[in-house]
Image (tube, rainbow, N blue to C red; front, side, top):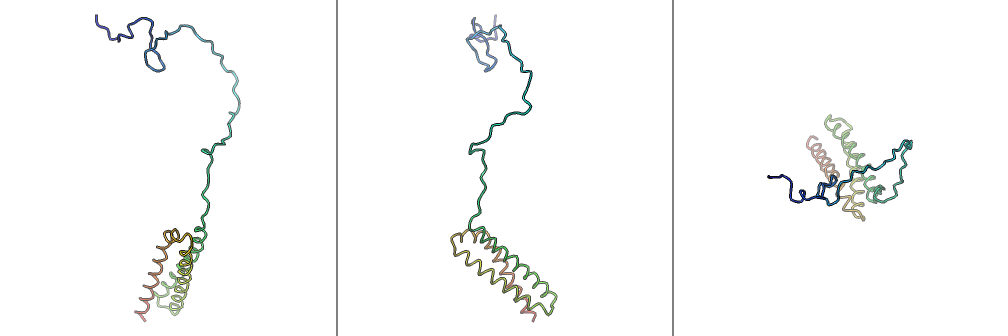
Length: 153
């Protein structure tokens, strides 16, 4: 007769281990173990403090470039506001347009001076990368505004 069991499982004294699904030479026992049931549980689980460096979080510290960039961004906001005011006044062709364009140019010059000083410092490359593009955009916009205003005068 043909059997679906393997040769090893047909031998006597072996059993099938339920944990690892492999053949085991250890026989299955019929003895039952007495387990003590826990009838009371702690109200709050006890947690161990996490002292490993794997669990601790470190926060990034400000670099010296961050302080300079913050100052430049404040000046950029001022120069940008002056540019927007000058643009509105120039479009409306008011009497204040010329003075607002001068104020925008002065604030842009202060910004460019601050930027150039910061770029000469230790973190110059990072400052150039983080804020240089915006300053170039504003400089080009002020130049275009001055060019448009000179054509209309």
